[in-house]
Image (cartoon, rainbow, N blue to C red; front, side, top):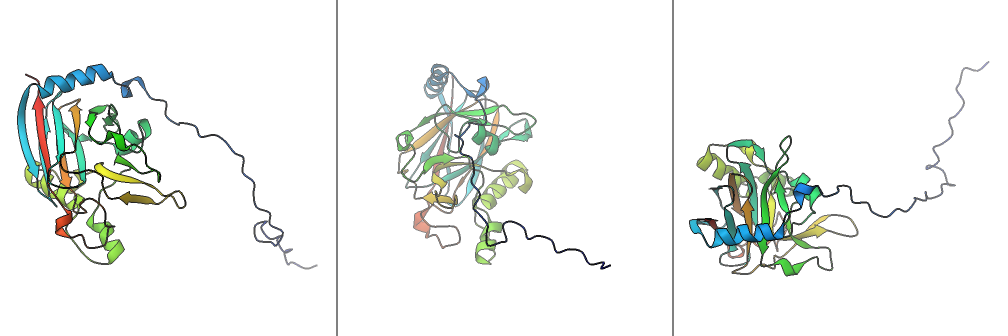
Length: 273
């Protein structure tokens, strides 16, 4: 008697008679119903905005191009970030001022609101806290909407440009990214560490995913001098902003970005009297 095992039948996808699998079609299902805390009263936040803007301007700072800066806010303060000289995008981090372990959670913000934030959407903190940190209340670029390629502004898709990924793409070492700028700012100005820097809110940035390959894409920012966004603090905040060294993001990561493509961003903080 032979001890040899019988030949195994080839896997069905290896043979010549393979038939393409037919998948059932289903309509998309919104995974996360909006909780009550994610839906704000527009009248309430319009009033918060009015009270702050008619109060006192308590701080003004300019974030130099290719650099980052930090500032603090009290609950109810309003922050305006303005495209100060020319088209420019920015990367924003948020922390609870009294507990920096509570920080912005871009992924959950994306699930509760969308890949790109619109006015009256909120910015949420990480687990186990999961509560609103700030509410987006005004945008001079709100009319851009979603373009023909699926591009939109102010994404929370997640990351910031960094020197580690730059080296993966180019094979070259570099220090000059939103990540390194944010690290420098929080270390020098607030005594934090690189590990405190986290995924960001990409303001003024036009992004999406290609229809064919679902790859992340950028377009040159439509923001021009004078455009601005505003948000109201829902807790006492530490905020950091990088004026991205990619400028208006018209040049892909890995390619040289001319200095004239980069511009500063202006920050103003208003407080109710």
